[in-house]
Image (cartoon, rainbow, N blue to C red; front, side, top):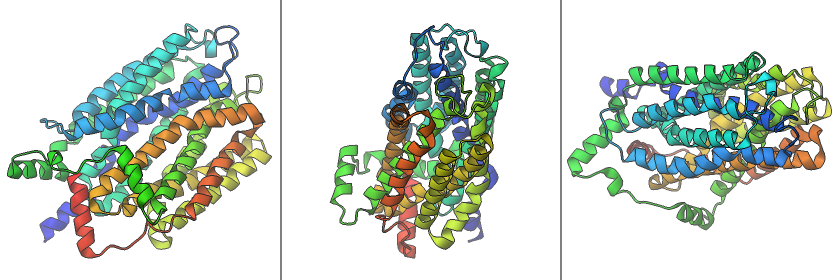
Length: 455
């Protein structure tokens, strides 16, 4: 009994190290704060100015690639058996390739952008964006799946909070590296690439995937059955998953997924276009008049409060409910952005971003747990996890373009107001989510844990 409890014990230190896999994706935050500024630069190709919609579309290229590649690579990973595990080989290769292509991105920046040595060739920038997107998509699913392979289902809310904290720490790194853009435009990209490589080396030598309970269970089951578990699993296509959603009498799952889609549109659009909005008024679409070197750094006012609030709020949700926490978070975010829209000063913007980050912690820590709880049977937990990531990545594709388009139509000062529109839609949708916190019987909990472990 004592030995079994020891196996179930949550290990924050180990989870933190596992989170290094997800941490390496922080390069996306630096990408979002600097590539958009380059595309929006007045001297790009000498005279060409891109609209907010076009900038948003280009900024979504990596997500478009990801939504195609990630499910494929996730499936390949599930079927992989090696002495390094089924996730680690792809994580290591993907991080190394991503770091290389990330360092090359500034070569396609406009001539003269922050004193860069860019060529001003859009095709070159798009090439590196494409290669970077493929490399990130090559391992992101595995980086997400690594934590549940080690952490038992009963502790995954805590594990999810730590993984989110690691993502937040990565975002702080990324936004802080924007300060170096004025020294040399290549410097932050090189530093980011080196940090990615160091992180994956530490991960590789400290986390031995073959020791995870999930991998050991998989190998034991295959040895007993004489064939791989995935060969006997019920397989379901994305279209069939959507059919099931609409057939459900209670539409809570559909509404939570739509809410996830809309709040991620707001967040992804904000992150992708904020550094332009915060930039000097002498630049196209600059509003807050922060120096160019600070424009990307300011979004730390969201990332740092998120890091601080994520774990405590994951515990707080057990007392008042996950749905209530999400609603509170959305209200905080909406009010903060409305104040930021009405009072456009640097100090007020920093303050409202702090509250925005706290609100985002309320929302983001609890959402996927609700989706898991809404799975109608233990056979569909994996399918519902896939639906969560489908809607969130789809929002990451459309978010920058939609927010950019609204900015073009209503004016450069409306960035925060445009975000409010989608957050308000998400808030309304949450009132139609009637389930998500049902207490399972001990038998149901055990069955669900066994199925998640199999997945």
